[in-house]
Image (cartoon, rainbow, N blue to C red; front, side, top):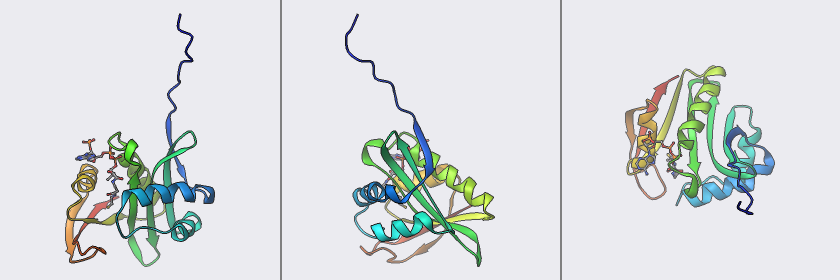
Length: 157
Ligand SMILES: CC(C)(COP(=O)(O)OP(=O)(O)OC[C@H]1O[C@@H](n2cnc3c(N)ncnc32)[C@H](O)[C@@H]1OP(=O)(O)O)[C@@H](O)C(=O)NCCC(=O)NCCS
């Protein structure tokens, strides 16, 4: 019989972010984007903002990714502001899970659609959104800090 300790797989869970998660969220954000990054100050704002849904995926104490959605009183459309999964945790369905849960919460809060912008060259993210039923409805020229265009996508909730 082996004397090594068996490792129990730790399950991945989703929950709302807390202020104490901000450094880990910032790390995921910082290592996922080259520009247009959320600062720790903005992340702290969105943790407590009543119109924000800041959800994270974690395994034990490790934050694996997050998504941020917000709504405005003057619009029936919620907006996906950011989604990022740590490099080691990509390709396991976490992006789909997080965005699916954020959509449900936005719908419960009265939003009837979700809108987002994505860099026209970000084929992985565009693939994620299309898989979840988002459709392209516009383009914003030179939207990002590096001059790239954004595609505008939306889905009815
Ligand atoms: C985009 C991102 C959030 C996707 O998260 P993820 O957890 O890896 O995605 P999932 O495993 O849930 O995959 C969802 C879908 O995305 C697409 N996708 C994921 N990885 C892909 C890859 N390497 N190549 C092509 N498509 C891919 C597929 O359509 C996939 O669906 P499938 O698994 O049924 O084929 C992640 O790659 C990331 O954090 N990227 C850096 C930050 C970023 O670009 N955010 C989006 C800003 S708009």
